[in-house]
Image 1: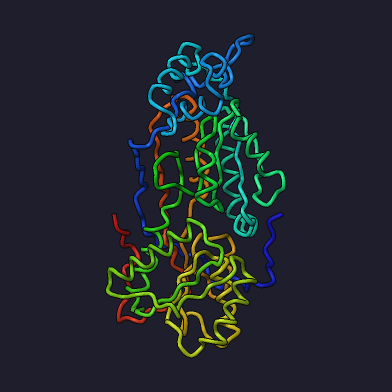
Image 2: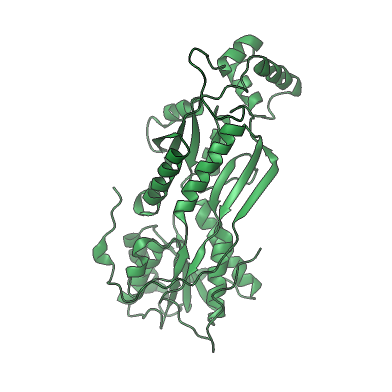
Length: 397
Protein backbone atom coordinates (compact mmCIF):
# COMPACT_ATOMS: atom_id res chain seq x y z
CA UNK A 1 0.00 0.00 0.00
CA UNK A 2 2.82 2.35 0.84
CA UNK A 3 5.46 2.12 -1.91
CA UNK A 4 8.52 4.21 -2.60
CA UNK A 5 10.29 4.07 -5.96
CA UNK A 6 13.69 3.01 -4.69
CA UNK A 7 15.25 3.36 -8.15
CA UNK A 8 15.00 7.10 -7.69
CA UNK A 9 17.13 7.03 -4.55
CA UNK A 10 20.91 6.93 -4.80
CA UNK A 11 23.21 4.69 -2.71
CA UNK A 12 24.25 5.46 0.82
CA UNK A 13 27.52 7.39 0.90
CA UNK A 14 28.06 7.91 4.56
CA UNK A 15 26.85 6.66 7.90
CA UNK A 16 24.09 8.52 9.62
CA UNK A 17 25.25 11.34 11.82
CA UNK A 18 22.73 12.89 14.15
CA UNK A 19 23.62 16.10 15.85
CA UNK A 20 20.65 16.78 18.02
CA UNK A 21 19.06 20.14 18.52
CA UNK A 22 17.21 19.23 21.71
CA UNK A 23 13.96 21.03 22.16
CA UNK A 24 11.90 20.63 25.26
CA UNK A 25 8.71 18.65 25.20
CA UNK A 26 5.87 21.09 25.65
CA UNK A 27 2.55 20.47 27.34
CA UNK A 28 0.06 23.28 26.98
CA UNK A 29 -2.94 22.93 29.28
CA UNK A 30 -5.70 25.20 28.07
CA UNK A 31 -8.08 25.78 30.92
CA UNK A 32 -10.33 27.81 28.65
CA UNK A 33 -11.06 24.65 26.67
CA UNK A 34 -13.76 22.44 28.06
CA UNK A 35 -14.60 18.92 27.00
CA UNK A 36 -17.78 17.18 28.20
CA UNK A 37 -17.02 15.39 31.48
CA UNK A 38 -19.13 12.31 30.96
CA UNK A 39 -16.72 9.64 29.88
CA UNK A 40 -15.87 7.83 33.08
CA UNK A 41 -15.78 7.72 36.83
CA UNK A 42 -12.03 7.41 37.18
CA UNK A 43 -11.89 3.63 36.93
CA UNK A 44 -11.78 3.30 33.15
CA UNK A 45 -13.34 -0.15 33.49
CA UNK A 46 -16.35 -1.63 31.80
CA UNK A 47 -19.86 -2.12 33.17
CA UNK A 48 -21.21 -5.20 34.78
CA UNK A 49 -23.40 -7.36 32.62
CA UNK A 50 -27.04 -6.41 32.69
CA UNK A 51 -26.43 -2.72 33.32
CA UNK A 52 -27.63 -0.59 30.43
CA UNK A 53 -25.70 2.55 29.66
CA UNK A 54 -27.60 5.82 29.73
CA UNK A 55 -27.71 7.28 26.22
CA UNK A 56 -28.38 10.69 24.75
CA UNK A 57 -31.74 9.36 23.56
CA UNK A 58 -32.65 8.39 27.15
CA UNK A 59 -31.94 11.93 28.32
CA UNK A 60 -33.89 13.28 25.35
CA UNK A 61 -36.97 11.24 26.31
CA UNK A 62 -36.67 12.22 29.95
CA UNK A 63 -36.34 15.96 29.30
CA UNK A 64 -38.41 16.41 26.14
CA UNK A 65 -35.52 18.06 24.32
CA UNK A 66 -34.28 16.74 20.98
CA UNK A 67 -31.20 14.47 20.89
CA UNK A 68 -29.33 17.24 19.05
CA UNK A 69 -30.08 19.74 21.82
CA UNK A 70 -29.06 17.22 24.47
CA UNK A 71 -25.80 16.53 22.65
CA UNK A 72 -25.07 20.24 22.32
CA UNK A 73 -25.73 20.80 26.02
CA UNK A 74 -23.47 17.92 27.06
CA UNK A 75 -20.77 19.35 24.79
CA UNK A 76 -21.16 22.82 26.33
CA UNK A 77 -22.27 24.44 23.08
CA UNK A 78 -23.18 28.12 23.26
CA UNK A 79 -26.23 27.50 21.09
CA UNK A 80 -28.02 26.00 24.11
CA UNK A 81 -29.40 28.43 26.70
CA UNK A 82 -28.11 28.21 30.26
CA UNK A 83 -31.52 27.23 31.59
CA UNK A 84 -31.91 24.39 29.07
CA UNK A 85 -28.36 23.20 29.67
CA UNK A 86 -28.93 23.07 33.43
CA UNK A 87 -32.07 20.96 33.00
CA UNK A 88 -30.30 18.53 30.71
CA UNK A 89 -27.19 18.29 32.90
CA UNK A 90 -29.28 17.69 36.01
CA UNK A 91 -31.26 14.92 34.35
CA UNK A 92 -28.06 13.38 32.90
CA UNK A 93 -26.61 13.16 36.41
CA UNK A 94 -29.84 11.64 37.78
CA UNK A 95 -29.80 8.98 35.08
CA UNK A 96 -26.14 8.12 35.75
CA UNK A 97 -24.89 9.31 32.38
CA UNK A 98 -21.63 10.64 33.82
CA UNK A 99 -20.91 7.50 35.81
CA UNK A 100 -21.14 4.98 33.00
CA UNK A 101 -17.81 3.91 31.51
CA UNK A 102 -18.02 0.99 29.11
CA UNK A 103 -15.27 2.00 26.72
CA UNK A 104 -12.88 -0.87 26.00
CA UNK A 105 -11.90 0.07 22.44
CA UNK A 106 -10.03 2.95 20.84
CA UNK A 107 -10.89 3.70 17.24
CA UNK A 108 -8.18 5.35 15.13
CA UNK A 109 -9.96 7.33 12.42
CA UNK A 110 -7.60 7.84 9.46
CA UNK A 111 -8.95 10.85 7.57
CA UNK A 112 -8.11 11.48 3.92
CA UNK A 113 -8.86 14.66 2.03
CA UNK A 114 -6.91 13.49 -1.04
CA UNK A 115 -4.58 10.84 0.40
CA UNK A 116 -1.61 12.69 -1.11
CA UNK A 117 0.07 13.04 2.31
CA UNK A 118 -1.17 9.97 4.20
CA UNK A 119 -0.60 7.46 1.39
CA UNK A 120 2.79 8.60 0.07
CA UNK A 121 5.13 8.19 3.01
CA UNK A 122 6.18 5.41 5.41
CA UNK A 123 5.86 7.90 8.29
CA UNK A 124 2.22 7.06 8.98
CA UNK A 125 2.39 3.24 8.91
CA UNK A 126 5.15 3.48 11.53
CA UNK A 127 3.05 5.85 13.65
CA UNK A 128 0.03 3.52 13.43
CA UNK A 129 2.16 0.54 14.48
CA UNK A 130 3.27 2.37 17.64
CA UNK A 131 -0.31 3.42 18.27
CA UNK A 132 -1.57 -0.17 18.16
CA UNK A 133 1.15 -1.39 20.51
CA UNK A 134 0.50 1.36 23.07
CA UNK A 135 -3.25 0.75 22.92
CA UNK A 136 -2.73 -2.95 23.59
CA UNK A 137 -0.39 -2.25 26.51
CA UNK A 138 -3.07 -0.03 28.05
CA UNK A 139 -5.64 -2.82 27.90
CA UNK A 140 -7.72 -1.47 25.02
CA UNK A 141 -8.60 -2.92 21.65
CA UNK A 142 -7.62 -1.00 18.50
CA UNK A 143 -10.04 -0.43 15.63
CA UNK A 144 -8.81 1.20 12.42
CA UNK A 145 -11.40 3.22 10.50
CA UNK A 146 -10.75 4.91 7.15
CA UNK A 147 -12.73 8.11 6.58
CA UNK A 148 -12.36 9.42 3.04
CA UNK A 149 -13.74 12.87 2.21
CA UNK A 150 -14.14 11.78 -1.44
CA UNK A 151 -16.37 8.82 -0.61
CA UNK A 152 -20.08 9.06 -1.57
CA UNK A 153 -20.81 7.55 1.86
CA UNK A 154 -18.78 10.16 3.73
CA UNK A 155 -21.69 11.87 5.51
CA UNK A 156 -23.24 8.58 6.54
CA UNK A 157 -19.93 7.27 7.88
CA UNK A 158 -19.33 10.54 9.71
CA UNK A 159 -22.74 10.34 11.38
CA UNK A 160 -21.95 6.83 12.59
CA UNK A 161 -18.67 8.03 14.09
CA UNK A 162 -20.23 11.03 15.80
CA UNK A 163 -22.81 8.81 17.49
CA UNK A 164 -20.34 6.16 18.68
CA UNK A 165 -20.62 5.68 22.43
CA UNK A 166 -18.70 2.46 23.10
CA UNK A 167 -15.18 3.48 22.04
CA UNK A 168 -12.82 6.42 22.30
CA UNK A 169 -11.89 8.21 19.10
CA UNK A 170 -8.44 9.31 17.93
CA UNK A 171 -8.68 11.37 14.77
CA UNK A 172 -5.58 11.27 12.55
CA UNK A 173 -6.30 14.70 11.10
CA UNK A 174 -3.12 15.39 9.10
CA UNK A 175 -5.07 16.19 5.92
CA UNK A 176 -8.06 17.72 7.67
CA UNK A 177 -9.40 21.24 7.14
CA UNK A 178 -10.64 23.26 10.15
CA UNK A 179 -14.26 23.09 9.00
CA UNK A 180 -14.10 19.28 8.89
CA UNK A 181 -12.53 19.07 12.34
CA UNK A 182 -15.30 21.32 13.60
CA UNK A 183 -17.87 18.62 12.82
CA UNK A 184 -16.33 16.45 15.53
CA UNK A 185 -17.57 18.82 18.22
CA UNK A 186 -20.73 16.73 18.00
CA UNK A 187 -18.92 13.51 18.95
CA UNK A 188 -20.69 11.57 21.70
CA UNK A 189 -17.52 9.95 23.01
CA UNK A 190 -14.00 10.98 24.14
CA UNK A 191 -11.94 12.38 21.27
CA UNK A 192 -8.29 13.37 20.75
CA UNK A 193 -6.93 14.92 17.55
CA UNK A 194 -3.60 13.60 16.25
CA UNK A 195 -1.20 15.55 14.01
CA UNK A 196 -3.37 18.66 13.86
CA UNK A 197 -4.91 21.16 16.27
CA UNK A 198 -7.40 23.99 16.57
CA UNK A 199 -6.84 27.47 17.93
CA UNK A 200 -10.07 27.65 19.92
CA UNK A 201 -8.77 25.08 22.44
CA UNK A 202 -11.94 22.97 22.33
CA UNK A 203 -10.19 19.68 21.50
CA UNK A 204 -7.49 17.56 23.11
CA UNK A 205 -4.64 17.23 20.61
CA UNK A 206 -1.19 15.75 20.11
CA UNK A 207 0.93 17.31 17.36
CA UNK A 208 4.46 18.04 16.16
CA UNK A 209 6.18 21.22 17.32
CA UNK A 210 6.37 22.39 13.71
CA UNK A 211 7.04 26.09 14.22
CA UNK A 212 10.05 25.73 16.51
CA UNK A 213 11.42 22.83 14.45
CA UNK A 214 11.36 24.81 11.20
CA UNK A 215 12.78 27.80 13.07
CA UNK A 216 15.79 25.71 14.14
CA UNK A 217 16.32 24.54 10.54
CA UNK A 218 16.19 28.11 9.21
CA UNK A 219 18.44 29.38 11.97
CA UNK A 220 20.97 26.65 11.19
CA UNK A 221 21.13 27.72 7.55
CA UNK A 222 21.74 31.31 8.59
CA UNK A 223 24.49 30.20 10.99
CA UNK A 224 26.14 28.47 8.03
CA UNK A 225 26.30 31.82 6.24
CA UNK A 226 23.21 31.53 4.01
CA UNK A 227 21.34 34.80 3.59
CA UNK A 228 19.24 33.93 0.54
CA UNK A 229 17.06 31.02 1.65
CA UNK A 230 14.23 29.56 -0.40
CA UNK A 231 11.24 27.41 0.46
CA UNK A 232 10.04 24.21 -1.24
CA UNK A 233 6.33 24.48 -0.58
CA UNK A 234 3.72 21.75 -0.88
CA UNK A 235 0.89 22.53 -3.28
CA UNK A 236 -1.45 20.72 -0.87
CA UNK A 237 -1.53 22.92 2.23
CA UNK A 238 -2.04 21.21 5.56
CA UNK A 239 -1.72 22.68 9.03
CA UNK A 240 1.74 21.16 9.55
CA UNK A 241 3.14 22.73 6.39
CA UNK A 242 1.64 26.12 7.18
CA UNK A 243 3.26 26.03 10.63
CA UNK A 244 6.65 25.05 9.13
CA UNK A 245 6.41 27.96 6.72
CA UNK A 246 5.68 30.22 9.67
CA UNK A 247 8.69 28.88 11.61
CA UNK A 248 11.03 29.47 8.65
CA UNK A 249 9.75 33.01 8.18
CA UNK A 250 10.18 33.68 11.90
CA UNK A 251 13.83 32.54 11.80
CA UNK A 252 14.56 34.77 8.82
CA UNK A 253 12.78 37.78 10.31
CA UNK A 254 14.62 37.50 13.61
CA UNK A 255 17.93 37.61 11.74
CA UNK A 256 16.90 40.54 9.55
CA UNK A 257 16.22 38.47 6.42
CA UNK A 258 13.10 37.73 4.38
CA UNK A 259 11.72 35.05 2.07
CA UNK A 260 11.41 36.29 -1.50
CA UNK A 261 8.41 35.15 -3.51
CA UNK A 262 10.53 34.11 -6.47
CA UNK A 263 12.50 31.82 -4.13
CA UNK A 264 9.43 29.71 -3.33
CA UNK A 265 9.02 26.52 -5.36
CA UNK A 266 5.49 25.11 -5.17
CA UNK A 267 5.58 21.35 -5.72
CA UNK A 268 3.38 18.26 -5.45
CA UNK A 269 3.85 16.51 -2.06
CA UNK A 270 5.65 13.44 -3.44
CA UNK A 271 9.05 12.64 -4.94
CA UNK A 272 8.04 12.46 -8.60
CA UNK A 273 5.79 15.51 -8.49
CA UNK A 274 8.42 17.56 -6.63
CA UNK A 275 11.00 16.53 -9.22
CA UNK A 276 8.85 17.64 -12.18
CA UNK A 277 7.72 20.88 -10.53
CA UNK A 278 11.27 21.82 -9.54
CA UNK A 279 12.51 21.21 -13.08
CA UNK A 280 9.79 23.57 -14.37
CA UNK A 281 10.81 26.18 -11.80
CA UNK A 282 14.47 25.90 -12.81
CA UNK A 283 13.51 26.39 -16.44
CA UNK A 284 12.07 29.78 -15.51
CA UNK A 285 14.23 30.91 -12.57
CA UNK A 286 17.46 28.94 -12.98
CA UNK A 287 19.55 32.09 -13.15
CA UNK A 288 18.25 33.56 -9.88
CA UNK A 289 18.49 30.95 -7.15
CA UNK A 290 19.03 31.23 -3.40
CA UNK A 291 21.96 29.36 -1.87
CA UNK A 292 19.71 27.11 0.25
CA UNK A 293 16.19 25.69 0.45
CA UNK A 294 14.04 24.37 3.30
CA UNK A 295 11.40 21.83 2.22
CA UNK A 296 8.05 20.98 3.81
CA UNK A 297 9.09 17.33 4.06
CA UNK A 298 11.73 14.82 2.96
CA UNK A 299 9.81 13.56 -0.06
CA UNK A 300 9.70 17.02 -1.58
CA UNK A 301 13.32 17.68 -0.63
CA UNK A 302 14.49 14.46 -2.32
CA UNK A 303 12.49 15.14 -5.48
CA UNK A 304 13.86 18.67 -5.65
CA UNK A 305 17.40 17.42 -5.00
CA UNK A 306 17.28 15.14 -8.01
CA UNK A 307 15.92 17.99 -10.15
CA UNK A 308 18.73 20.30 -9.04
CA UNK A 309 21.29 17.62 -9.86
CA UNK A 310 19.76 16.85 -13.26
CA UNK A 311 19.90 20.59 -13.95
CA UNK A 312 23.65 20.53 -13.35
CA UNK A 313 23.63 21.93 -9.82
CA UNK A 314 25.75 20.32 -7.11
CA UNK A 315 24.41 19.54 -3.63
CA UNK A 316 25.56 21.16 -1.37
CA UNK A 317 28.20 23.12 -3.30
CA UNK A 318 25.67 25.08 -5.36
CA UNK A 319 22.45 24.48 -3.43
CA UNK A 320 22.04 23.51 0.22
CA UNK A 321 18.91 21.64 1.27
CA UNK A 322 17.02 20.67 4.45
CA UNK A 323 14.02 18.34 4.67
CA UNK A 324 11.60 17.38 7.43
CA UNK A 325 10.53 13.99 8.94
CA UNK A 326 13.80 12.01 8.65
CA UNK A 327 12.24 9.16 6.68
CA UNK A 328 14.23 5.88 6.69
CA UNK A 329 15.62 6.43 3.19
CA UNK A 330 16.64 10.07 3.74
CA UNK A 331 20.09 8.85 4.79
CA UNK A 332 20.34 6.95 1.48
CA UNK A 333 20.31 9.93 -0.86
CA UNK A 334 23.50 11.25 -2.42
CA UNK A 335 24.51 13.21 -0.47
CA UNK A 336 22.58 12.09 2.65
CA UNK A 337 19.81 14.57 3.49
CA UNK A 338 20.05 16.98 6.41
CA UNK A 339 16.61 16.97 7.95
CA UNK A 340 14.39 17.15 11.03
CA UNK A 341 13.71 13.90 12.90
CA UNK A 342 10.11 13.44 14.09
CA UNK A 343 9.62 10.74 16.76
CA UNK A 344 6.52 9.10 15.29
CA UNK A 345 6.64 6.42 17.99
CA UNK A 346 6.32 9.09 20.67
CA UNK A 347 3.43 10.68 18.78
CA UNK A 348 1.57 7.37 18.67
CA UNK A 349 2.25 6.61 22.33
CA UNK A 350 1.32 10.08 23.59
CA UNK A 351 -2.01 10.19 21.81
CA UNK A 352 -3.00 6.81 23.27
CA UNK A 353 -2.04 7.90 26.78
CA UNK A 354 -4.01 11.10 26.24
CA UNK A 355 -7.21 9.39 25.14
CA UNK A 356 -6.91 6.83 27.96
CA UNK A 357 -6.59 9.69 30.44
CA UNK A 358 -9.76 11.32 29.12
CA UNK A 359 -11.67 8.03 29.15
CA UNK A 360 -10.68 7.15 32.71
CA UNK A 361 -10.98 10.57 34.34
CA UNK A 362 -13.74 12.24 32.35
CA UNK A 363 -11.77 15.48 32.70
CA UNK A 364 -13.17 18.62 31.12
CA UNK A 365 -9.72 20.24 30.82
CA UNK A 366 -8.37 20.06 27.27
CA UNK A 367 -4.66 19.89 26.50
CA UNK A 368 -2.45 20.46 23.48
CA UNK A 369 0.70 18.32 23.57
CA UNK A 370 3.51 19.27 21.20
CA UNK A 371 6.24 16.71 20.49
CA UNK A 372 9.63 18.25 19.84
CA UNK A 373 12.13 17.10 17.24
CA UNK A 374 15.83 16.62 16.61
CA UNK A 375 17.84 18.35 13.90
CA UNK A 376 19.82 15.75 11.93
CA UNK A 377 23.01 17.05 10.28
CA UNK A 378 24.16 15.04 7.27
CA UNK A 379 25.60 16.20 3.96
CA UNK A 380 23.28 18.62 2.14
CA UNK A 381 24.19 21.94 3.77
CA UNK A 382 27.34 23.83 2.81
CA UNK A 383 29.01 26.16 5.29
CA UNK A 384 29.50 29.57 3.69
CA UNK A 385 30.71 31.29 6.85
CA UNK A 386 34.18 31.16 8.35
CA UNK A 387 33.25 28.56 10.97
CA UNK A 388 30.49 25.96 11.38
CA UNK A 389 27.22 27.18 12.87
CA UNK A 390 25.84 26.23 16.24
CA UNK A 391 24.02 23.00 15.42
CA UNK A 392 23.34 22.33 19.08
CA UNK A 393 21.49 25.56 19.79
CA UNK A 394 17.92 25.23 20.99
CA UNK A 395 14.98 26.81 19.25
CA UNK A 396 13.04 29.70 20.74
CA UNK A 397 10.92 29.18 23.83
